[in-house]
Image 1 (cartoon, rainbow, N blue to C red):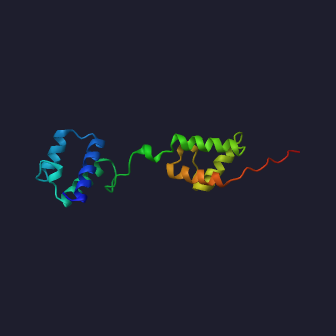
Image 2 (tube, rainbow, N blue to C red; image 1 turned 180 degrees about the horizontal axis):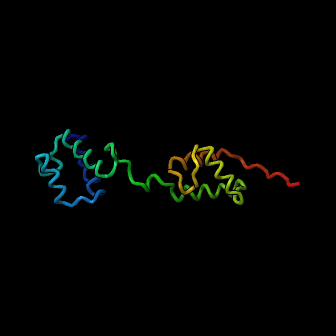
Image 3 (cartoon, rainbow, N blue to C red; image 1 turned 90 degrees about the horizontal axis):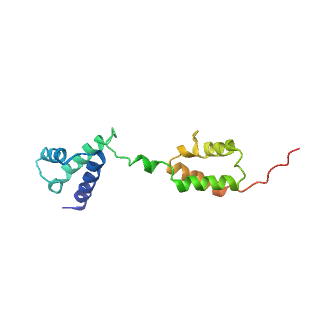
Length: 138
């Protein structure tokens, strides 16, 4: 078995488990390709099985995007943003952080709605932001 096929076998089993396919359905799928085991699949057949399973995961293009949890902001990132919101003196002004997020991500989102990628962009921008003294009120 070459490396490409071995990777396809691993992906097949991951996707099979992710969609909750039982053993009978899985064996029926493999029988449609004339094999009893995923290790017996040819490389082109393995790719077809992977594409089919990806489509079953809900991606219309046959590309599995990962779990939704991976796309959500992590708790550590949310805590880091909150900590630096306090450090910058924005804790009593939620509109300041909302405006900052809007400027950095080009989207109107709350901290909880950010993806991990967007949260990283916000954190890097916050690291570059220096604390400014508050203006004296007259």
